[in-house]
Length: 405
Image (cartoon, one colour):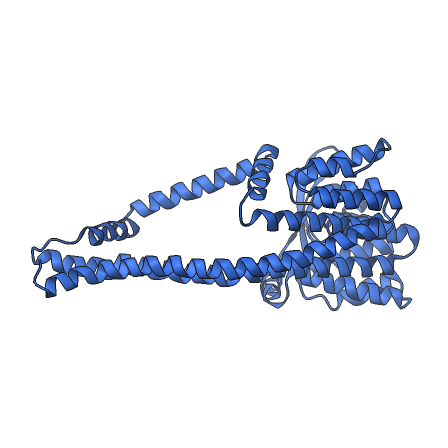
């Protein structure tokens, strides 16, 4: 049975800390309340067996895959007429990840005591994002929870496929870069210095390019490399902290969208994600204003988020949503016009779905073309660098053998 550390307020008003054993966080809170202790935070203490199980579960399935499988199975059970609590009980036996299983057990216990499924999910944002919770809320209110979960599952699966295509396209170039960098480091830190030392002992002058690469190898093998690494880490940390601010995120997103080669691809992904998410939320029965609020939180782009928030304000004021989307600079005028047409005709959900499908198909083509263009460029650049290093390695040997030194 899991053990939990808690921080709570006693009846005397004093802050207390301690440990408690319970089946779930909800059960732990319930036990503490019986003792007239009001917990403010509860954290599970992982045992050795739980840590091992969690470690092996990382290799078994990704978190997203487990959530999609869970949602699929929940939808199937609920659509078959099985009660929510029974479905949750069945699925707790099939979940392999320890953290996710404990979350499901806690959710089930809270639902059994009369708490809504939506409120229980809302406390586990690590697993269930705002889109998931919002659509479940609609399903609970309308009595079509099984259908909502089926829609969520399809939406998550579609989004995962798009992300996997992008990641797959990046794998081969990244492997090339890593292996070429490894070859460069080995040549500059071991091969060239040894050859240079042997020639230098004979009193001969080394070519300039060989001296330059020997200097690079010296830096890579000396304490200066620690300084360089430290400086790089510090710059990256500072940059990440800046990017967490609203101004930093805005500058980052604006820069990414302006990139000559990858900008159009990023823009298409942002717009496709917006159209797909909004279409899914609207088709599930969520109101337009609430749907826009949810989409703004998950859009992943500051420029798009600002445009969506402005569109939501216009909706609440009784105006259209197409104008702020057009003015954002992220959505092309043609797509903004399609949104306006869909809004006027009452077919906005269908129009957004068509936009999403077209953009995703176009994104696939762009990814294939980028892959076809980037891979040979990387190969040529790396071959040139390795060839230059090989030239710097062989040149002094040839000069010595030719009697020029």
